[in-house]
Length: 367
Ligand SMILES: [Zn+2]
Image (cartoon, rainbow, N blue to C red; front, side, top):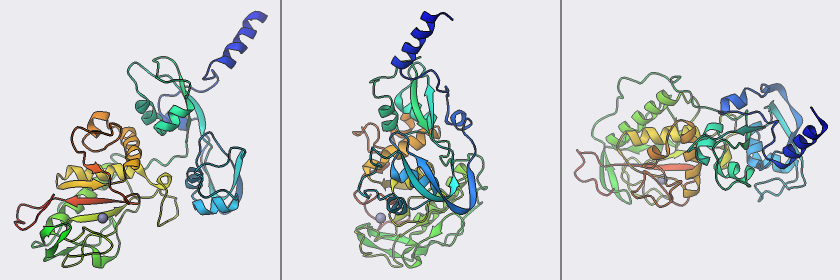
């Protein structure tokens, strides 16, 4: 190569993002295959984590399976700031798992591909992807964009890997919802039975109508079967045996409202107030979809700012923007028809699911 040619090459590689040395991938799997394997120690060790661009404290804690508060304490971080301070290059972590670091890759978009498509293929968040490629307002087919892909990301979605569907559920008849969710009661309440499908919260508030319990169990069975998700999901509260007021809830009075805690990523320590980065959004989407497919659910409440997380997970699992319009506010924000999942304050650790009145419940009221 001539001298002129090589200096030109250097100029080009400095001036044009992304750099040519980044591996080009089409999928998260291709990116993850480039990374070394996860290492696990018998005892916890101190390691140094090198902070990647836009990496949040909660994401770092989740990837090492340590409590967020611990990471803040060990590194004297500001608990209010989701990001480590700019001047910090690394954080110390005491952990038993050493996942491979995030890897920087390039992706060449094709005709008509959107940011959402690329984010779904690489299993990254849309705002991160936009920020990593801040110079580009729009995607251009053939012009690469870059992303930091997490090869250690937990992919709990295993289609075809789930347990077989039970032939039937033995739910007693006669559990009837009376009145409204906010002013009602339950006659002949049916208690949610113990099951491998879910984990029960406090049993004295796990009473519902026959129809609610039946549909809830079917949804869980379909969800486990379809997604192969193996970890815990806790059903928090439904109603009291005879319904009526269940403080601090306003509803939950007529055996049709069910609170389900958002599932944590498998190695995240149990916590009462999980951060969105500690939630398994793939499992969350799988469950919401299964609930919707019972056609017995009228609404699912989840804080609006979390709909994006569900959307990104769902897209990575093969849903399209169109199929998700019936389910989520994101990304249209002002949907033409009311989607199944709607905003309600205080629903950031659990979803609240409302089942419809059954045909044999003449006294059941309200949507
Ligand atoms: Zn609730």
